[in-house]
Structures are given as C-alpha cells and as structure tokens.
Amino acid sequence: AQIKISTAGRIRTLGYLFAWPGMDATKFLKTKRDQKPEVSEWLLAFGRFFAGALLLWLAAKAALTTEPILNAWVAMFGLTLILHFGLFHLVALIWQRAGVAAEPLMKSPLLAASLSDFWGVRWNTAFNKLVHDLAFRPLARRAGIAWATIGVFAISGVIHELAISVPARGGYGLPFAYFLLQGIGVLLQRSKTGRAFGLGRGVRGWWFMFIFTAAPAYWLFHPVFVRNVILP
Image (cartoon, rainbow, N blue to C red):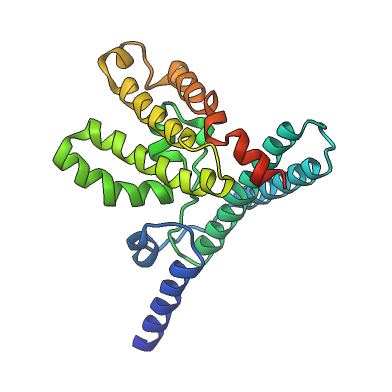
C-alpha cells in the first residue's frame, strides 16, 4: 500500500509539472476531488475548442472579412477559445476525472460583477495565484494594498510586453499602459466614489468591468503585434 501511495504521488507531481498549467501546487497535489465532472462541462469545453478552431480557420481563409486587422482579431479570439477556454478546460476535466482538484483557469469571466472580480477571481487563475503569493502579499506588507495592487498590474504589464511587444519589435509601452489602467480601475472601483456609484456590483459593476477591459484592448494587442506576429 505504501508503494502505491508513493507511486501515485510521483505521478501526480509529474502531472503538475508537465501536464497542468495551474500554479496552486498544494491544492493540486494534496486535495482529492470525489465528484466527477458533468457531461455538460465536457460539452462546453469541446464546444469552445471547436468554435475557436472554426474561427481560426475562417480568419485564415478570410471568409468573414477581407480586412486584415479584423481577421487578426477573429484569429486571436479563436486562439483564446482553443487554449484558455477549450484545451485548458479539458485538461482540468481530465484531472478531475482522475480525482484531482484541478479547477479551470478561466471561471466565466464575462459573468464578473466587477473589475476586481474579473482580474482577481475569474481571469487566468494560474497567474492570479502566483502573483498574489509572490508579489501582492510582500508589497502589501511594505507599501499598502493600493500600491501592491498597482504593483501586480505593473508586473503583468511587463510580462505582456515581453510576450507581445518584444516579438513584434514595436508597440513598446502599450501593454504596460493597458495593465496600469486596469490597476487604476480596480482602485477607482474600491474607492468611496466607486462604492457610491455601485461600480463593484450589479449591472453598473459589469459595465464598468466590460468598458475598462474591452475599450483599451487595442493597447494590449496593438497594431504592430497584429501585423508582425498574428497575420503572418
């Protein structure tokens, strides 16, 4: 029995290192999940995956529009569906089927009731866990919650500069500005004025979240990146 437990532990550790995009090692390695995923979850994950593949194919064929920039955005949306909402969700379901507490990285971000809910709870939980433990907590102890919030968004901005602007060889500063704006938005939402206007809940919170994330998305995936990376 001891050999079986040890073997299972090694398999799960290797799975965490090489077959799981999440960052919560304690939960993945030590927490057991007894409930198996519902059929509807499998269908949703497969549906998103194939919808993304269809969008990517339509963009490559210029079937929806002949405008290159619009095609690139269709392709990027398709890639997001394939990876973040499709493949990563399927991997989570496979691990859940094996009894591992592996939660999807994306938790219905369009249902977020506020900007902080979107970035802190629903969007890319792997990065949220990592940056919260390694950056937010130490910064909050030294500089306070407000500066820690700006700090973690600044870190995200630097990472996206490396992933977007550097390969594109241009558009430097735009992804960083995008995430800095998100941090300012979260602080505004949590301020007295934000609370008075209801920016952290309900319909107003949702619209505030949607406008803040979607309207400046052109900064994040800037034209240089689209032309030099996505379109080729």
